[in-house]
Image (cartoon, rainbow, N blue to C red; front, side, top):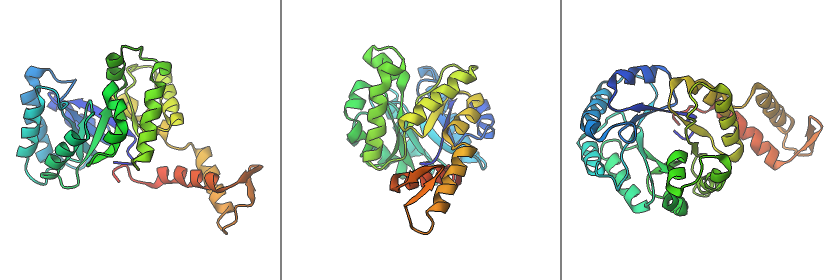
Length: 280
């Protein structure tokens, strides 16, 4: 999942939407047991997700967003996870309000009992989580960080605007890089029908160093994927940079600008985004 760009949430208590969400072809499908599901509906949601995972056909990687470790629903989520048959086609778990490395390691251990290759996406969405973001990023089993910007703003009592959230985004990007993780996943855009707002949010996140985005509607998928992938012009530039330096010389110019090692690495990174499968 390190190259996945679009993560689409689906309420766990709406099984009639599962196949439709998979057919929309997100890079990752997130079956939700947390915010999208009323507490009274969580037991039925667990059963519905287990049934779908047992019979699902080919399609996007599937994560389950469990409840956070301090939630009354967490013990039942963990028991449910441990009861799943070994070999269940579950790519991993999304862990909200990630704050404690030891707790994450315990969740990862339980996941591996039924999905040996399963990994965690840890959501940073509290002040404590951001304070401990380096520990969270380095925790056993964590493959990627995500930013829960809405919950983070509520926890801090700040406005959900770029200026107030810039520090958190920068820290998450930095912690991801230091820990050797994939570029992190930015939070949701709540404007479902405003394509300009979504495109601007994606461009902003990409400029900061994010590599993916949480989505809450299939209509957002195309714009999110297009926004994080190189444009045709960028891909053409990257190919010309690598062609110009193929002989090993960095003393060349492309488009009238000198090419050095950082430029070559950037060109390689752009082309890798186009060639790597999302599930890798």
